[in-house]
Length: 367
Image (cartoon, rainbow, N blue to C red):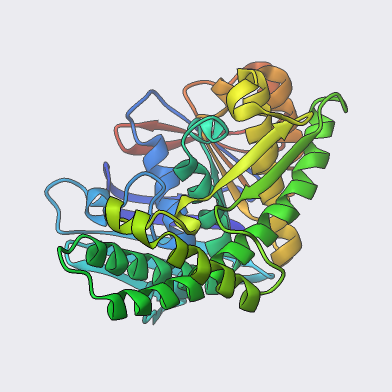
């Protein structure tokens, strides 16, 4: 799939924008704080209905305005489609090919978009929450049922934690929340574990190619609850774990076990690089994971995802820059940067170059 056009109205620092894109490479150049990342953000929200920068939709509305609108035209399965999102101060409206969507999850599977930013290069060494978000973000795109399970799980978790904070805890009500938490938490654990197994296989091959077979990358899903073969057994193990942890949960007034506490273990040559890897190893591993993500989307959906590279080239050396670009020949790329080296520019496939200044975008020349 590829994005053909975007129309913006009062989105971030863009008053009005109507921009056509190249189906392969789109380089967006400009100084910092001019709107480069905002443009990528407007494209990204079409994949999950939310931003990669903020949890508050209202922040995407231009200052002083009541709403913002993003409309994207794209091609998928040799067919043209339109997706429109209107962000208002009281909520959002979504239209898919002109038909109003009834719920936010309707947007899933329409557009497959992967974002790669300097923050993603830190995913290996930063806190577990970042790695959980990495899993959740991609699984929600690939499996709408995962999005549903995760949304319900978070609501149940919130209710259970609210109960644990009360002075008097009703055991019968707690038991009900335990059963519901185990029901949806078990599905999430198994779906995540399956995803990580597939990602591990693909990222291992990519990492070998980047490092000339000098390093072996392996990733594991680290669950605080024993992983089972099927959802029935997983549910039983989950329930028992919650019951065993009851006193600790009451003491801490929060739920201390479940997929909301899980992590990914990332090793190079059997060494945990979160704690013992060099910055170069950590960045190469992050690059391998992102490229594996793109390939996995292709395998699962039979569609190429659109890749947004938000100022990430400046964080990579030339060798890794070249590998990244050369391995993505079939994928539509959006690259934001303050400048691009002539050597790398010459190695890029044909495309468009845009210049952004203060929310105004000008197409320069074809690359």
